[in-house]
Amino acid sequence: MTNELLKIENLKTYFDTWAGVVKAVDGVSLNVKQGETLGLVGESGSGKSVTALSILRIVPRPGKIVDGRILYKGESLLEKKENEMQKIRGKEIAYIFQDPATSLNPVFSIADQLVEIIRHHQNLSKQEALERAIDLFKLVEIPDPEVKIWNYPHQLSGGMKQRIAVARALSCQPSLLLADEPTTNLDVTIQAQILELMKNLKKKLGMSMILITHDMGVVAGVADRISVLYAGRVCESASARTIFYNPKHPYTVALLTAVPNLAIKREKLKVIPGTIPNLIEPPSGCRFHPRCEYAQPACSQEVPPLVEIEPEHYVACLRAKEIDVKSPLRAE
Ligand SMILES: Nc1ncnc2c1ncn2[C@@H]1O[C@H](COP(=O)(O)OP(=O)(O)OP(=O)(O)O)[C@@H](O)[C@H]1O
Ligand code: SF4
Ligand SMILES: [Mg+2]
Image (cartoon, rainbow, N blue to C red; front, side, top):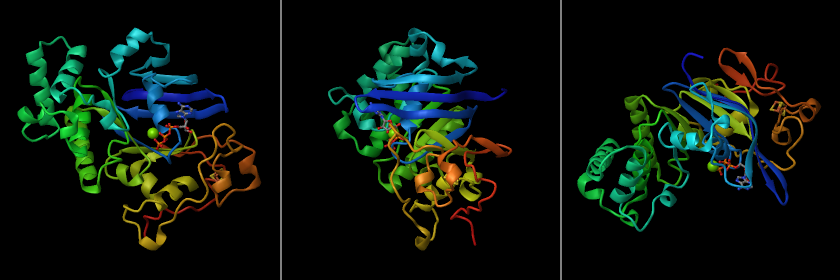
């Protein structure tokens, strides 16, 4: 356990709703090493955000963590008292929310909001906190930081707001950054700029990061390792290179084949057939079986365990060794 920063084992987070129990996260295991970026990828509704919210124990009601372990720097987060968790949130582990616009208050200037956050965690005067906020603006490469910091949220573009969301997350020098779809609502050029910025900052500040996205194109070139989620479970986990060029799970291949902005030939692009399953009564056995072209009768009966098929390459598919799936990124 030398350089492991975060380790999640068999995490289960359920929502007890009127319609039934939604098993949003149902046995997720993953880990993040010191200084690395883990890409957490999966279709909408696969449990990415709920996994991240579980780490900080901020799952909204009626969500509840019902099982599993979350170890951060070797300490169990699920056993910590609420006041201990408050110290971890923001200071040790920071979260960039899926919609940055909603995390900024429209009636206060950015300076006011950042100063308050900085002072909440650090014992600084207002002036010192303001200087720190301006430094953070410089860090995230916002031009004219001394002027821009006095803007109100509505005066800023989407890209600028996202840079501020990054600055805010970095304000207390966290060891781990959870970035939930940080570039989803931005156009492609701005998206690339923000990802490049985050990649550089992560290196410069020596942080680790979990980059959450439904788009394989976003993690390409940023993530060191990738865990692929399907219907609340991890179906494959490996180095980014392996996931892109040597995936073994049919769902990973389907995800890669559905990405228009990877260097895939147009004629190879395919939409994943079917829809993500209902998580109240998910499919039996392998949850992907109703959509999997390789499914056999056993697939609907047995839950495939996540098995290490080669060093650092984990796959949850009963047929991983016998089927010959190919990445669309590989030359024929
Ligand atoms: N408050 C809630 N009440 C009931 N079910 C919920 C709640 N929040 C999330 N869920 C369910 O949990 C599942 C996982 O949701 P989650 O938000 O983690 O998905 P996601 O992978 O982040 O998707 P997206 O890409 O759309 O953000 C979904 O089926 C969702 O409907
Ligand atoms: S276990 Fe069966 S259904 Fe699931 S991915 Fe493997 S082949 Fe497909
Ligand atoms: Mg989400």
